[in-house]
Image 1 (cartoon, rainbow, N blue to C red):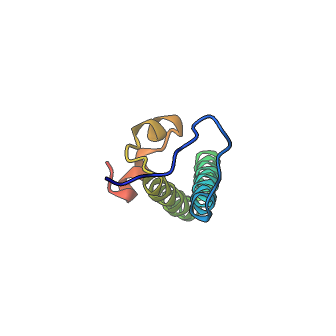
Image 2 (cartoon, one colour; image 1 turned 45 degrees about the horizontal axis):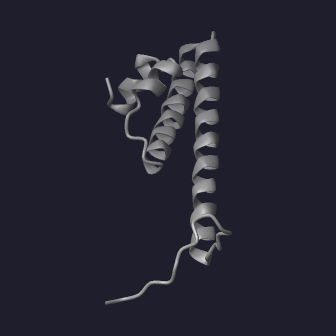
Amino acid sequence: MSLRPPRNIHGPSFDTGINVLEHEMLAEKAASLGRAGGHAEACLARLREHQGDAAERRELLKNAAAAVHAYFIQRELCGLRRHDDVIRDLDIPNQVLVRLGAA
């Protein structure tokens, strides 16, 4: 029979170095996800507002696809595997999705 030290559920909790590190890593994941989402939104907004020539549009499309791809990867690293809601909420154009191989 093995004995474990009692756990005081209602008392103060003591964070070990591992708990603190896990908390820091989760906070960084969340911050990184926010930055990636903001960058994707900004690139998609520039693509929507573009009214110049075709060469500029291709470059904006390339940048938007790269930003959305990075955002999707960051979401997957955070355990968010389904992107359907994000595609709908950000109104990601099919031209961008085709570049990601999703359409």
